[in-house]
Length: 184
Image: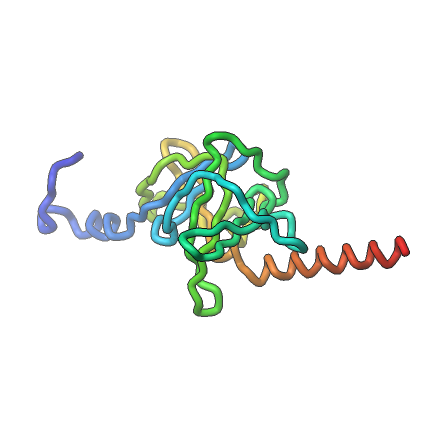
């Protein structure tokens, strides 16, 4: 497997498949395996102290100081409508870079544990299912088949759409003010 193959010795179809091969960072969240494209991953850091920001949706746990930059941290479990992630010694924050209206922004995502970097051929990726997944299908780039099991490949831009997160924050703030008005 580690042998070098000359480009001319490989059939054109295999060369095309090799060109379509992509690398993904895999991680565990709530006992399920997920993956994101390695090109958007900037770094993986140990879970540390977060600064909580008032009036944020539950999925936004707070912010961290990453070499002088303020980076929001999102709990993927909450983002997917699950209970907040339980913090263990394997809990990590994956720093990803997302495109938001032409601007690049770093966002941290809390995951239970990082697994490995996998290479998955495009031929091994099925389209997102129309139903049956525990998360909205617009978050799913595809379903990778790895060693007879599925890995949910996330569309990071859709999962971390800042407009969605801001809208959730506004809805939470409106609900809180409505509850305060009714209590008065």
